Image 1 (cartoon, rainbow, N blue to C red):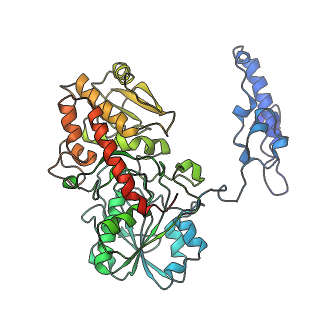
Image 2: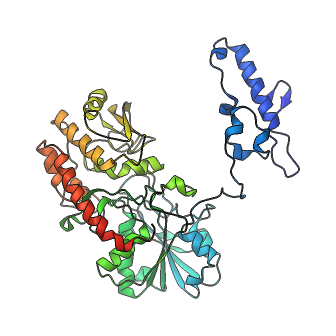
Image 3: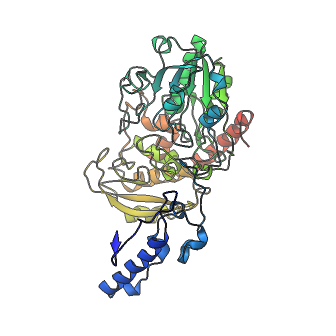
Length: 473
């Protein structure tokens, strides 16, 4: 950038880092130039801090900054990533020099988001070790590298060109590893970034692997990770065992508030699966923490889970997959922007405001999905803006929304018919909700409050059940 005859961002200190003083001076000159070019600019002065990148990019102490910058906090530069509060299972495995894997033949179940605090991927970390052999890779829904964008798209295995290892698909012809896939390994390492919701299929891929390992006498090691939406809040109805499917293979509420390691340990014991299971616990994580409290890098766990806000609305938002309402696939904010061509957004928001819905602002929107439901069609709907995620209850909010849409547009609203996630008979909404009660309530235009009362009873029971399996306070 050249302003006023001087080049900025060019001066560097003896360690090669940029000096910010020229930049501060440059921003002043830009502001002055803008004022001369536009008589309106002087009415709306822009603070210097709005023009500066984050302070962590500068090498100078805070005292050298000017304007609003001096009140910002700096972060330590560790060369690859900033200081973190939490170490996930892969970080602990690395710190303990992989001793638990010594002399093992290892299979690795991961996807593109299984990285350590420095964004190094598990495959690269384990591949470079000499005290054990990494022999095969396994991947869940959306693929080993997150390559399948849309929902319910199968993929086939392949030989990885970079590592030379076989890659087995567990979202295609097989969802449970076959004997052939497990041949030659004595340990299966599982590392998944779950999102804290029962219908997220990664947990069920891991459960089926645990079942296969128990049958083959293979040890399973889970590298634990944070529940991104915390470990305290529990939401939604319990799954009725008659409605088990690939979006729910164990009796859990919709939002369980547990980590992958806790869940698999509970399932292994409660269902007497008999797997030799070991969980590498995290350090520095506690139940009240959300993902952005951990300091760990967020890598999207699946293509339509771009942010922590997405994960926050997902427990209820995923219910829309079972309707003809767009859940926001094909927008930049899946599960946060929702709607359909027949919805008048302002009328819906007015109706929703009459309910006691905390922690969120509902904004009327119009949008055109680029793929998924209603591709290229002009849709009306709402965007959910989370204002207090500790008060917001996603399942309740979306149950109310679906009930209102049915009442307002009875001839246009419709449920999706099977198949859905390998279930060919039961209605998709029933296997997501956990039984038929939501569908029946909506179809009969009943007040959903009755559903919420029933949910609260089951949540209290589950809270007692899970106590023995919590690894973190």
